Image (cartoon, rainbow, N blue to C red; front, side, top):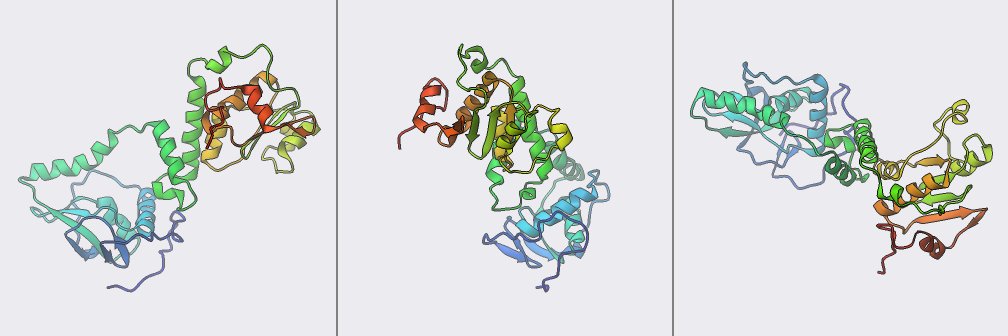
Length: 309
């Protein structure tokens, strides 16, 4: 077995510090192999199909190589017994070469004709291209992945792409048919001007961003990412779905709303999505009792009724 080598010097995703602790079926050049395979062979013995139409950009190959080093082999390279050429896994071969891996797992398969072999080669990428990701389910899966236990880029997505998808989903939810909460708002809003809501780790204030005191109460010493000269001109607004998306990417949201009515909608949406276990309200410098907050929103808000253990 080849000796362990340092990570290559090319710029790859920052995954080299992570290594899976799962038990493998085998090892290939000190990389764990988890997939079913027929043999572990030398990388230099593999023969790409010269007619392969599937292109693999360098960034894709870098990411795949980094994932293989971090996660191990989760899929083999398929070789045709008919031609001796690669049918599936040209990208994996390129990643192994880029990572300077000496051994790789392979799966040998039979094909009845050259046409059948080429059809499988083309279909390998084409079938994946025809799939559509459900944005809502993808965001939920992202939340399961982004626990801090593993690098998020093991999913094949960057943190920026993750944030973009989750935020786009939040905006789409806001653009759907009119919210029941908006249609059934009470004559008297629950929030009062100046109220500061603490929703989990997020902060929402009903105030005016041009007033320094309101800004200070909102940020509570946290450093704003908005330029000082702009913060007085911009309304810091959002929605309950915004808080959920910020939760997914483990960021803290600071939201300022001008009216009690719009602030109520944010609080209600947060309760509906997350629950009411971690909500607080500061009014005129004093924190309202939790029971009082429950009474304010009643049991009509989905997710707003406290459940007994």
